[in-house]
Image (tube, rainbow, N blue to C red; front, side):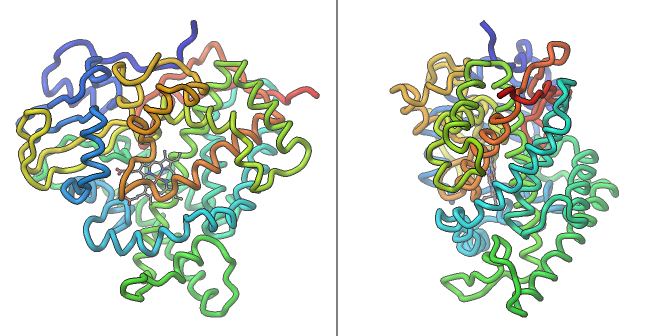
Length: 456
Ligand code: HEM
């Protein structure tokens, strides 16, 4: 029986230095197998103590019930500062609350309907690009899905396609930035002591500054269009014209640049990872591949998809959901205990790292039936429904839940359905994929698939 690829856990006990070395290579394979079974695990090092919380009630406490007692740590802010400045992803307290009050309305249900046409156009462009390459030669599919997801973000945020000169430069800038910061990941799970100064290489600072320069230009131009009354009705306009309901203040241009940087980063990296894994899983499970294709034919067939179709793409949605379970793009998240706590009869000192791991929670052997199997139908079972409520957090949960969760759950199934309608994805037996945690969960040597046009 084929199983979706899973990195081998590290063997037994290892020294701290070996753990750090493994960790730098890949967070996933640095962890021991017991984390798929334990409710909690404590890591003690001379520099920090961290507690990985797998018990649903603990995760609930940290994320949903008492988020203010478990803020994001400065460690995260420092790691991401050159690129993200003071973006909503890294702030805490009153600053964060104000930023969410301004941003959230842009991502509410009604607005998502308005962004649909832009998403669909990006989906059509991605299908057309792949169609040209579909000659059954192996293709590195993450590159294609990155391109598609970046296109979605540019079109929905700034009404420009990825072919636009600035959009292309921002996209290239992000890639260069990632290459010079290989251990950066969205959870910023970097086990360094808090007192150690964060070292950003000159290249890291240069690539981050280049991206921010381009975004500053986009924001400046948009500000002028808003003032002239000629701005398109997209997410950027919505966010820049929304006043904080409590203070009446809008984002200053510089603060908007910080937010745009995180929308590009969090919005395209994550969706690209999920879409690439979804296509890989469909290649691995041809019966589900056919079901998604048949559904696409039945729902949007020869015409362009419409917003109302999304609710009918149930198979694509379940496949995408199951993909996010097996390959959560953000595999681990870190918080800091703002005061001393007691978890499962153990003392958790103030300042400890609290790790929430979608990767382990989603494959937990005491929670999920057949946790390592790919089964999109599981969400219709009692176990699947319970776990969906209690042990499924690909977008995090509670007050700090991903702003783009609703957006991503339209984008993912839609693009999957559009790509699979006309194209067939097959494995390349010479290049099986293996997940590793980079900025998001990616294929160790990429994700390679053979793509052919679908007959009839
Ligand atoms: C499949 C796609 C996506 C996944 C799996 C995902 C996952 C996540 C997760 C796990 C977090 C919480 C991280 C933490 O607390 O450390 C997060 C936060 C965030 N995401 Fe997403 N995301 C996705 C798509 C998007 C999109 C499309 C956007 C915007 C266009 C977006 C914007 C954000 C922002 C702004 C935050 C910070 C929220 C806060 O801290 O208040 N994400 N995302």
